[in-house]
Amino acid sequence: MRDFGHSSSSADRPSAAMNLIHALPPIALGADDFHRLAWLAEAAKPRLPRIAGFLHRELARATLVEPWFGLVTMGSMVRFLERGCPEERVGKLVYPADVPRHEKPISILSETGAALIGLCEGQTLHWRAAGGQLQSVTVIRSD
Image (cartoon, rainbow, N blue to C red; front, side, top):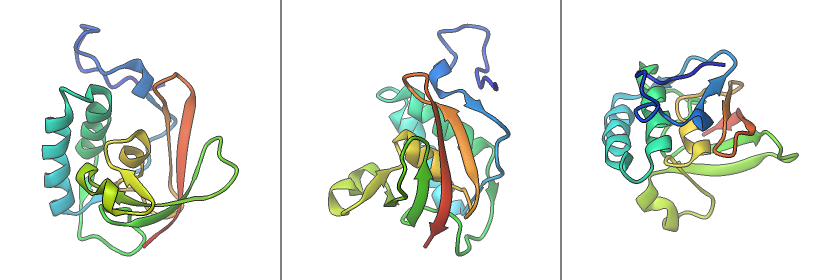
């Protein structure tokens, strides 16, 4: 299991609930998404420290690219499998302010949203959720 704490003080470390497990798949982001998400993660830190930390870690390991079809970006309609759900889920990855405007929103400030950003079709990300249970998402399609 990989712990992303950067400090020896447990007060400074992200919650163990967001520890990722398994090998981390490579992720890619467009520059516009990267800069907006970095600002959002920083702004969300006081209210949602665990999710903000998860998003910061994903941004830190992302490669900046020109987005392509099949890459999960902000505004993508994503079809994916989530651990524990027998059926595929479909939703649009959105900023928190846009959640009320969409029929099937997935906020980037949710565990699922932070896990999906930057993945490509066929990739899976595993992590430990807030309750300690193993979670994962596998991208089937991103438009």
